[in-house]
Length: 64
Image (cartoon, rainbow, N blue to C red; front, side, top):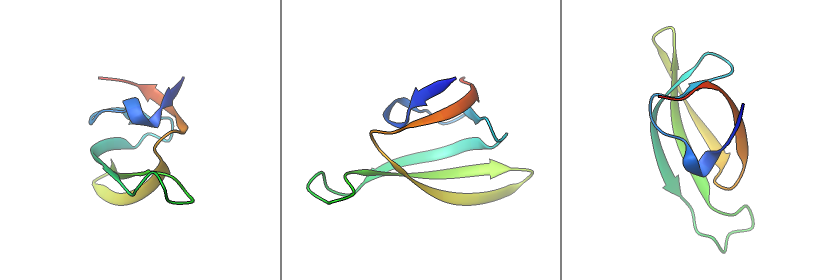
């Protein structure tokens, strides 16, 4: 299912199987790329940082 990135919460499982550990909005709305959402994802004990458009959408497997 598709969910707006601005509505994501920690604990949400992405379609890739990664779980959102934390979210933080960053950037200014006047930037060419618009506001960004810094997301820490975890899968199999490994973490990575993602940078998504705050007003975009992503595919999720489930929400907690």
